[in-house]
Image (cartoon, rainbow, N blue to C red; front, side):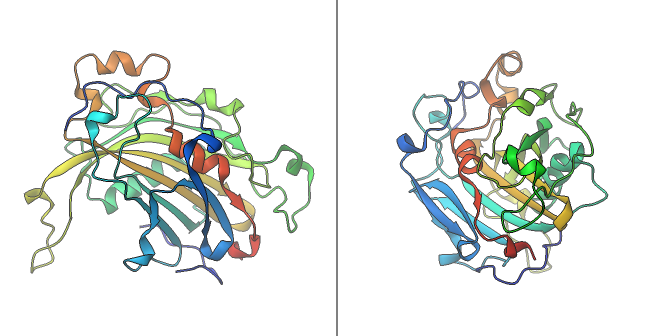
Length: 293
């Protein structure tokens, strides 16, 4: 996995069709609660069913991991309006800035990095990037501020939106250029660029290893997981703030469902960010910038 940035005070069923267009996130209607991350240096709004994984197992200092514990994932519910798929997992990471990776390629870089950690095979189509692109995020007024306690203008754009032609994408590639006019992180008190993507990875449930250290993934049940990813690029403090939401979608990839490809190319559908992911990004606040020192 990508190296974490040095810190001083972190705390430790089958779908029958793609998801329908998702409504804009409304915190007051979601049952979301404000959750402190990294000892309160960051906060996000999460549904109350999300619990802190560090309460039951060790989590690296550079990560916050929250798991939806509302019940087992039920992919058959994913096409029903008003029903949220279970089994979601949110990870927020503070990583060293990947200076050799351009903004337009950052989301793909981190998506592939996650796929390697999940042992999602590239050679057999076990990872599929549906769309990727960049968007300006954060407080507009911060663009003219000097660095300071409010963060200032910590990001620098080095490239624009990009179309994705990813190996094994099943013909579903599409860019996110339409997101450039939407501020997905309005509470971020700095103006910077975010690299975003939506993709799918084939992951073994309960991955473990045999006595020789070899993975037993091939002998275990596997399922597709929808990955929504946002890399907030903070170049001037040499930090990539990575937010990832994973949602189980079942043993059959929506791309492989009859007529799903055509639906993916219409407005809405699987290429929209989920209500939960929009809620996380829309509520993400940095209250203590010394976390990144």
